[in-house]
Length: 73
Picture: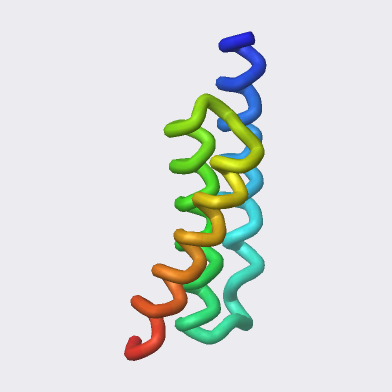
């Protein structure tokens, strides 16, 4: 079970890294929002042991924080 969770977190991290390459046409605020959502999803997954609710909740909170941080950049 632990191996599957580690693989899932690694897969999400790889997808985030590859997905960030497509951010060149995004505004700075959009980039911060996407980055915050990605970091929040990984953090939520790690803190809740890979729980779907934790991952989605982390992504939502991270996206909101990233959006607000990027607002004035």
